[in-house]
Amino acid sequence: MGMTGNLNGLAAADLIQLNCVDQKVARLQIKHENQITEVFFSGGQIVHAVSGSQKGEEVVYDILGWNDGDFSLENDINAPEISITKSWPSLLLEGARRLDESAITPTVENGEPESEIKEIRMAQKFEEILTELAGEVTGFRGAFLVGIDGINLASKNVGNVDPELASAQMAMLLKLVSGSTDKLGAGNLEDNLTTTEKAYILMRFLPGKLYFLGISAERKSANLGNMRLMSKLYTERLAKAMPH
Image (tube, rainbow, N blue to C red; front, top):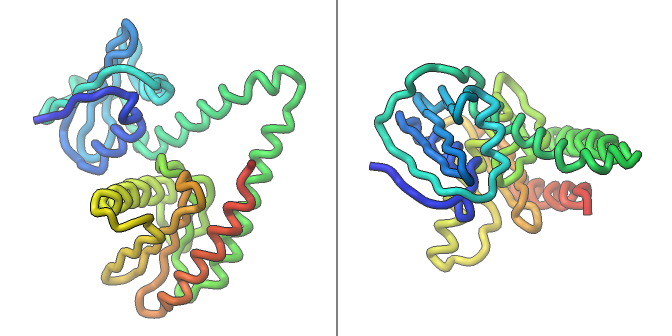
């Protein structure tokens, strides 16, 4: 059993996240203009991608820039070979970086490289804000500024957490929760709290819902009231640091 659709309604990055989180063996086929591309999934990762004579990571980077095309997803189809070993969050992050670079190239060629400098300074500012947040939350484990597409913009974490993977998984969860509250007519989602045996994970949208702040803290020592207050204060700070 699979699904079909158009990239106008569901972006390629969303399809990739959905299938990797689902951890099924599957083949995603996309028809874009006169081009047919196939992406194979197994064990929660992209393992192979092919488009004509091209295969591997570059194929994935290409489809991330497509805004139209029909797709079909079929389960239980194994990849004919392994051409990709990089994790799917890393692929999406690199693809987003390439799209950003292509978008600013004309500006650079016109003699205005300041845009690149501004991006670097902005990332540094985000990290500084998250570092301050870490000192305000009791039992702090990590903080992540993430785009709703799952791309990590900045992070501050304690331990061996992969920020790219954690960001992508939090984005998928927040999308599902936000969609469910909309369908239930429960109003705008203010925040989402996940409670596990060891930790609290609190996520809150920045204004506009294009980005969100995720905070993780030790359950034994964290104070939920403090976490919610800090999430509100720091989403406001991060929103002000965003380019306008």
